[in-house]
Length: 172
Image 1 (cartoon, rainbow, N blue to C red):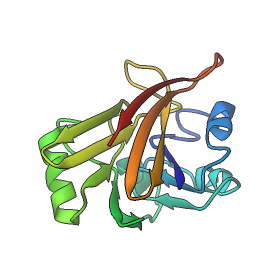
Image 2 (image 1 turned 30 degrees about the vertical axis):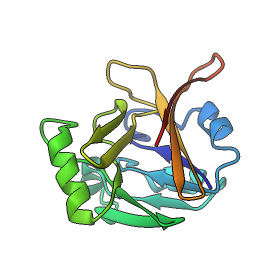
Image 3 (image 1 turned 180 degrees about the horizontal axis):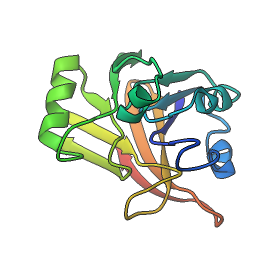
Image 4 (image 1 turned 180 degrees about the vertical axis):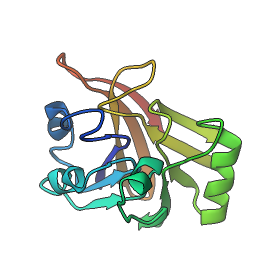
């Protein structure tokens, strides 16, 4: 199963729309995870034209009155994947993110909040962050693809832009 992962779109406050390359990248996905800070239901509706969308609430979603769950667990082929905005301080602190994963009972945790993509292993927990396609911090705009097959997962950070997409891969 191919899954598109996105976070921190901040539409319309910080960007007018999702870049069209995101729709090209997500063209063949069967499911989309949004790790928070949509700030508008318009984002979810746009992505639902591609595939079913699972969203969690980011700090700016609360501010804008969007009522998504704070955390969500999706099990695919026996792999429990946790989705949470990852609102910890300092941003992206892997030890705090690990504890969120442990509290959720998942081995893979997808978060956002940092606007910087990463794939990190902390002990036996895999932490994934797709970054932001619209307002990245000190990096290129990014999204992520997860491919789950036969109980195995491959994650890939995709840089988006006007040029052909470049990928950073990580096999788990």
